[in-house]
Image (tube, rainbow, N blue to C red; front, side, top):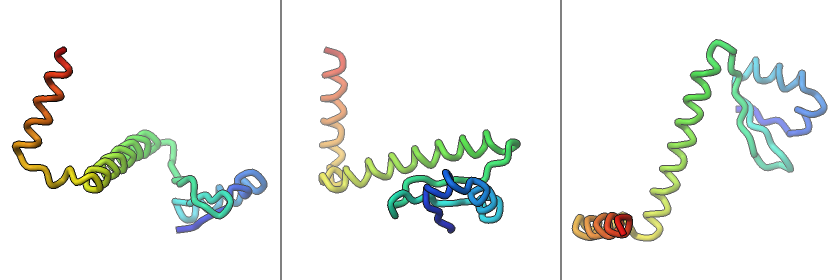
Length: 95
């Protein structure tokens, strides 16, 4: 995996294009911290890449929700506790 500073995009866009073509993926850093991931996406595969990127973002969100639930101890709830939560949420929605 290759990393490039953000300033390369601004000052040397050809280097970015060359690196993407060669490596296929580049992590972009700003102030030494990664902030973007760039993929070489040919026009014929762009729709597929966008769909997969959306799926990856959804997977990350689910993973973060699961981690949050574990931190709060929700992964240790019994089936009865879960059912009570569901019923409470449904009745609150109906009101």
